[in-house]
Image (cartoon, rainbow, N blue to C red; front, side):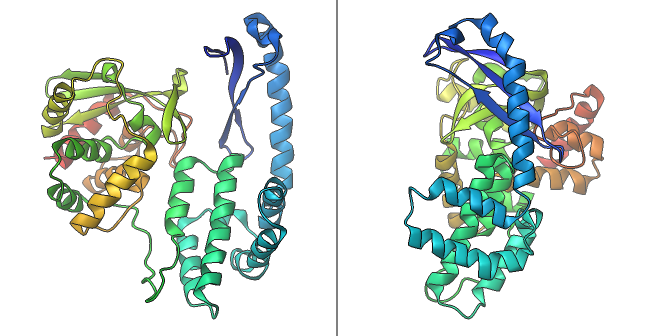
Length: 368
């Protein structure tokens, strides 16, 4: 929890995280830019507890209300009823009634499982309906996934992975249904890099792959965060907030902080990249939006023939798999990836010196 200053409006606001019943976290900010009282920091601090407790009740109420797919769509319907025609919303409701709800047995948890989504897409591709209806079914499920992210039920990385599994079916010859690739091997990475002629793009993709960072962390690296020492680059990471794919705020709580290591030939390449582009301490290492990065990576997947992957899968999941294949234990992988449990946890980071050093040695083996 923190009281922060909005420099534009010169008012203070509350920035807080609330732990949900399932162990995940809901992050929210409370601003009242038109309230003159919010120009007084002490006043905002006095209201902080009251506002957070109120938000906790809202979240608890939301958790109770959204028990299944029907509940989720009901809330979605209310938010879109003034934007979409009654006929469109009714069509989406029919897709849920006849296809989505029966397949997932009204279990929201199953709807956020990428393997289940692959099976669902395969099921829809063989359904005895036209291509237009098939894609309407898929787009309706995509709407629910996007809305789930908006509500804070799932994180942005989970949302991206789910949407990746729900690509529209192609016109003409049906696209072969395959499980989503959540792992890009070192050999595939090298094949990808060989298709790139732009030296800066090579550095960007190699850094994304070997760092194992979340996209918000990766896009939030500033030059001042990087320390070059003994053929190793130590990067201090603070989790980032993204708005429309761009970094808007650098978090500064202890739970948002970690360090990662960049090793071997990538260190020299990264140093040259910074010098070549004349980047200063306050400049971002990669001055690009998430969507633009997605387009750039997809272009090289297509050119190289390497199977397309999500940004999250290309970097974070891939390096985790390579570490596992080398025999790195759970402690080491947690430390390097910023996880505090066997499941990915975006809220807590481990900074264990010994595990970090061991992890660096594993990274040296991987990137040789």
